[in-house]
Image (cartoon, rainbow, N blue to C red):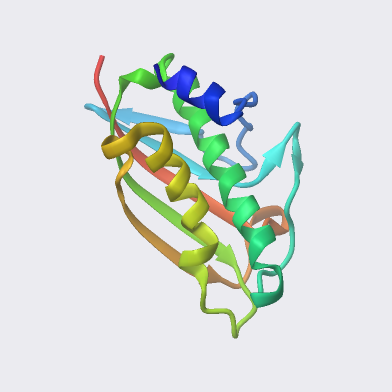
Length: 151
C-alpha cells in the first residue's frame, strides 16, 4: 500500500546510501528503528551542497526532500516492507546555514511533509530543525529518524 502511494507521488527509492564514516546505517532495538543521518546523496554523489541562506531556501528544501527519500530507502532495506512502519516518531534536521539564516524549520518542512503525505497520521512526528556551521561532504541538509515498526 505504501509502495502504491510512492508510485502515485512519483517517488522512486534509490539504493540506500552507504555510511560515510565508522557507523552503521540503522539500528533496531525492540520495535524501534534508528536511521543514521541521511544527506542528499544520489548514486554516491552529494547533489545539494553549500551554505543555506534566504536566497537558496528552495534548493535547501529539495535537499531535505532528498534526505527523506534516502531515509525511506534505508527503512525499506531494514524492514523489507514500508507497510511495517507503525509510526514516524521523530526527525532531526540539520541545515548547513550561514550565520544569519533563521528559517531552518522551513528548510526541513519538505521532509516532514513527505512523511505526512506517504504515511498519513502514522507520519506525524516530533522534530528538531537546527542550523549548523557545516555538514559532512558539505551537504546542505542532513536528517535522521526514529521509526516505530511491527513485524
